[in-house]
Length: 192
Length: 152
Ligand SMILES: [Zn+2]
Image 1 (cartoon, rainbow over the protein chains, first blue to last red):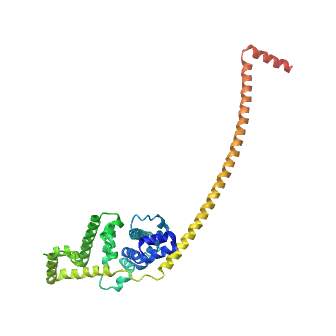
Image 2 (cartoon, rainbow over the protein chains, first blue to last red):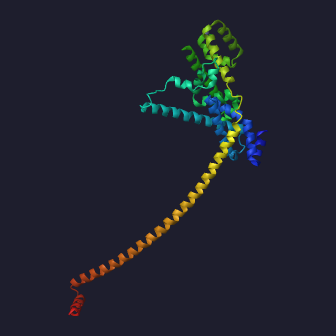
């Protein structure tokens, strides 16, 4: 079903139209979220929030942009919010550990972050998993552009629409993202 | 091309984004330089991993779970609307009661003021009389005399 028919159906019969929309876009949305959080369970949870927001605000979608662009934008925003909230939580947790002497003086060690690593990495012996760290360390706009390109193989035009940037800005962001990743990976592997 | 130059183009070589000329030069370098080749192998494994690192199989309960969450949030929304209406009604009732109380209190205050004004007038008139009684005005002396004669 094309997007125009999908929106028409939602206007006439919201539950049926919405089910069609989820069926069509769930894999794409989950994978965008996964591209940011690198964890299957978290990606599915965020994707659920994305579709809940879509359900609530679909009446406000005025067909000005492509449905997929609108969905991707919500998915990117929700994923980034999730990452920010998690960073805050880790920060508060470390504060808690610092100030609470009763917690057996447990200090955050590098091992802790390894425990949170996604399952894929333990399965995949070919890669060190450092690539995730390198992507997460990118400036936010570079991370968004690179992730959309790598995980969803979105065209530069689509990425530009999602990010509300010009085509040349997106090209430049992805170029710089690759340069930065290359630098980080080379430094990392040389120091092993 | 030296090692540094190869390193600067490695990711673009892996992504196949270089001109034929650069591609051939780097291929030749990697065949003879083991340290660059080792870097190439590792970074290529990372990039290849990203290409395959996708969720292909969606949890079959995804839509069902989503449906439940939406129903739950809609119920909560209705509850909140009911609550809102209820609180609005309460707020209106409270406002009316408050208005009545203010009205009654103002009414009382007004009455008190009236009494006070009356008192003040009485005080004033007594004071005037008192003052007049000490004045050298003839008419007040007459009154004084009248009062005295009245007392007698
Ligand atoms: Zn070399």
